[in-house]
Image 1 (cartoon, one colour):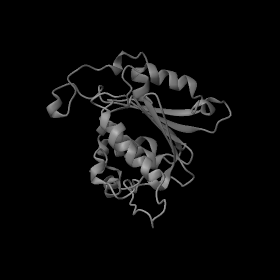
Image 2: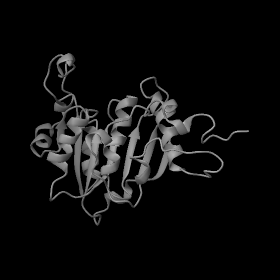
Image 3: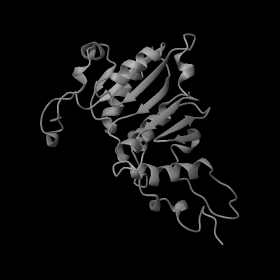
Length: 235
């Protein structure tokens, strides 16, 4: 429903990014569905084969099973690397996506490792780069050990920030995520996914430090305004 308008033939050109190519079945569908989309995807399994301790991948290249694998590499649309590594993401952004002739980034879909730190990192890095009224979708936030902290620690902080201020005379308030709040219009969650919508503020280029997941991202006790006596109702 949220992506439907982007499938129209009269939609202005835009960029789409998928995190988690796997065997490319989803990516192929996005390319077919998003007629005017410049579609990119990031996948770790197509890096050099070898021990994970050496920064390589020992479990096989799932991506090369796609019949268009080499085409996507040649087009610079499939990017082989760690989608949770800020330095690698910055390389993809600056070398492949932030080109003078590139259309605006409007949609990012995180369907990668489904690990809470990776999911949160995707939001902190990519959300500020999305153009106004674009969306970031995080999939598979269901109650599993790997993803739980995203749902129970990250989301409550961002939801609190969405309603920032309230009545300062009644309870003090501080932002948990100051790099995200100024750009956030809405959060929509339904079974196993959340959609984060950009407001009308122009996209921002943040430093690598600002684009990195902060210490409180998956531990809301580290955000002062999440502690008892701050934003919560007290009696």
